[in-house]
Length: 114
Length: 117
Image (cartoon, rainbow over the protein chains, first blue to last red):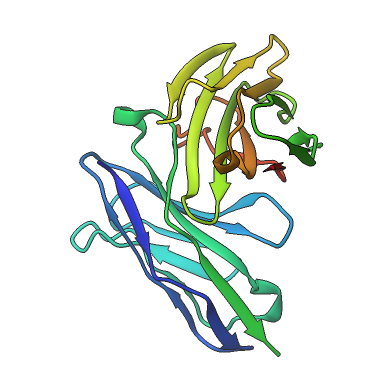
């Protein structure tokens, strides 16, 4: 079945450091890929998405490129801030085969120190 | 514009009891999905309702059920609670069918945290 694997956390970085959170997926169809972020005590918020191969999603300085050849959707940011501290979830949906349910990775906790 | 509202935010139950959680979607949204979040299993899909009909269901036992009303508000019910049901239950709404790449973006509530003793 479809699945998502994320790099394990927690990840601790200093402010202005470069961020990469790895995400790989297994899917039989043509999934859409997402990154969600969960700040402490809050629900999940969509950070960015990509719906087909080679699409790049971007938002708030974060980027991720849908790589079908490596089945990856790694999240990157050039310069993190303390306010980026949160848990990041990679997810996919195979809408046409499995409806709208999201399949999530385990989440990666990011802590940014000043 | 009000977001997704879940009630109650926190609740404590004992084994064998049942619980009902409520979700009010964003105004105009017709789809409501439910997810369970636990430290061990992460985020898992429970079910999705659209126009009062269950469209999709995850791999949970029949103790987990839900429904959607004509105003799109949704409830989920867990009967005969077990310790393992302790979790954060997240509701998400979308304008149309969840996952539709153009209009199916999910908006999540803050969740209902259930503790089973």
